[in-house]
Length: 638
Image 1: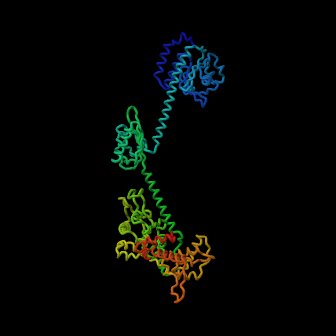
Image 2 (image 1 turned 60 degrees about the horizontal axis):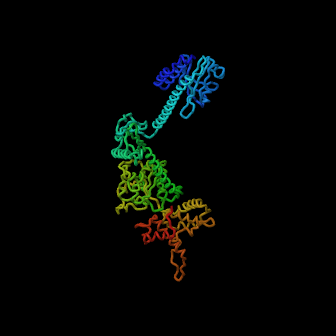
Image 3 (image 1 turned 90 degrees about the horizontal axis):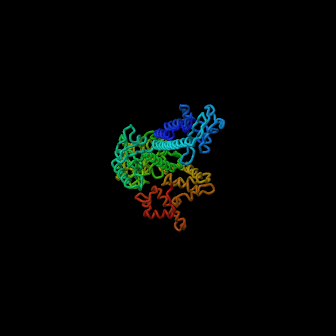
């Protein structure tokens, strides 16, 4: 190294060097810096590096050696003079014999290095982030001005490294933010002060312009329905008028938007505002909820189907098969076999408790629709104001309490069988709509203008004489003939008493298993007593009697004394004159009353009021009957 007094021309050279590097950034800055530093100090090499403390290595930003550039120079600091600079965070000067002082440095000897001067690069927190160093093949006496120059260059290098790290951190944050926005499933739209689109993420592009239509520059309200456009402008005005009190808001009720092709969709929406460069911007985030609404509707449909299946499970509890071989029953089974394989509408007629639903299930089970739903509806068990919704479904808001869209029984039974029990109870105004479905196969849900088409086989049942109902104008004649395509009559139990032993034995086994009781046999006397009754409640009454007899059984025998209706035990002849009538206790009288009320209720299908109700049959007020039922603990069987 030459004498600094003669070579440096300190102030002018320093001024030129500083002016040269001040016009550069990044790698160009570092190259200009080390080349100028090597020239100013008249050394063979100079470099500036960045520290990677986790690896214990230095990576060069730029390295000038023997008049040429060394690209991507990386070296471990252990055993090098740079290690002393980094560890000690102070300048290190080796004026001579640097190879001997640092024998573990693999690069010094090949370079024939003699002297070294290095200073650390430190960030604003005092952490070492790299170093600036020079190397020469001649001795390098330490001159105060040389040390001052390299420190000035080091300060410039520190500022540039800090700037690069700041830019890198900013770039990483921008890339993260861009990745967050670009990968978001929600549509994100940025608007200027005139509500024109200035930026969109890919989800917004796919949502509003799936065919690649231009969005930038378009007024965003054009993509909304007229009502939602006005609502959106009001929200933006409210947000702008908040004067910094709030910077974002949720759009209550969402927005009705439309894609570029005009397809509408419902969207949840939120707004936020920000200012940049003195201009106001609005960010809109929208989420298409059509799929969610469809999913919610599917969930509601599945819930509805679950309810129907639960009802079916309850209704078929104990269902096994149609038992018996009496001639009337054999004729009915022959009818079932003939009609089951067709799609013909069937009208099942019979008294209460004869098993009309069992017949409907047998028809369905032997039909081509056996693997599709069997859906039932008791037309007499649903309030008149709700039966239309039960049959045909309703839209959300169709009436008070309609908080969600709901499928009716016809849609649930699509491709299957719909069993309409007690069809005679259907209100006259709905009989017209039912007739249309039977004839055309379509209908409109309550509150909807959309027509639904279904493929449903209808099986109806009634204990009423519909021909009489038609004459009395309580049932439409055209609907009667549409239902009565294939009538099936279910015989009452009194016409097939030879089947009572088979039925009694089957019911006994079922209820004994259900209650955990043991009943070994049914005696001939028991069967005679059962066959001697006229069974006005038919098979349902017989089933109830057997269940009571099993529950109260003693010594593994049925207790028919307790189970049979009291009226069956009453004497059929008057006692001889002068004979004392038996005295009954209050408990006996309550049991007699209870049995009488149950018999009346079973005969009327447990209908309390009305001309054909149990109260009229008993010649008492419906309110009195309800009170006595409660007092005697009478409840309708499940």
